Image 1: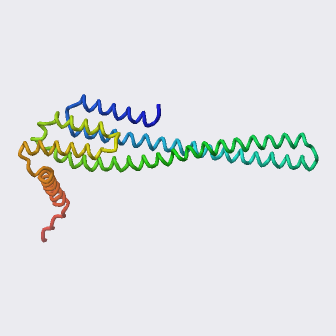
Image 2: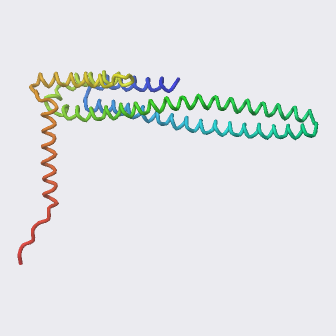
Image 3: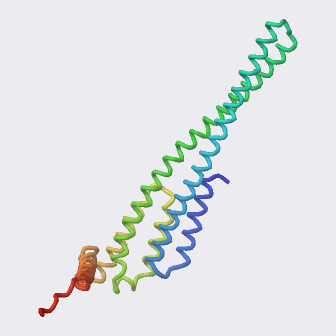
Length: 225
């Protein structure tokens, strides 16, 4: 099974889990992010393995090159001494070592090409994961209202559909659909301002907490003697 096959299986397993656990859309979003993070970690581990393999192939190619040079030197020495048997044998060894070197270099080139493609996949996955995290944070603020919680099961289904697309290039589109579903529910519940209304509430709560924290740390004025 290839690396991409394993990643696809991992995504499908997570999707199945989301479909079975229609309990909390916020937790479902967290599991989706965990899936993306795990996929990213898997890609990075594979990249480290490739780096080790490439380093090993470079060393083996260099050793074969050095051995070929030594055998060619012995062939020249034998030629000067008119020892054709030894010269012929040394040249054959040099030829064998050169063939090994070329084989190692060819394999190295293939692995390096794979490494470049993997770097591109890692960069894309990093961007996808960060984008998903940012959008998840905005969605969670909207999901934490009492009226929205009544629709948890319906929203979990939308999150599961989002997870099913996490292995494709249209993850943003999946989030768009999830946000559209949430906006529809907000409209039905009379939450016309949607994320803006909730975000304002969150900011006010955080501001009140900050004022309380600052007041607690403010030094008290000393009484006059």
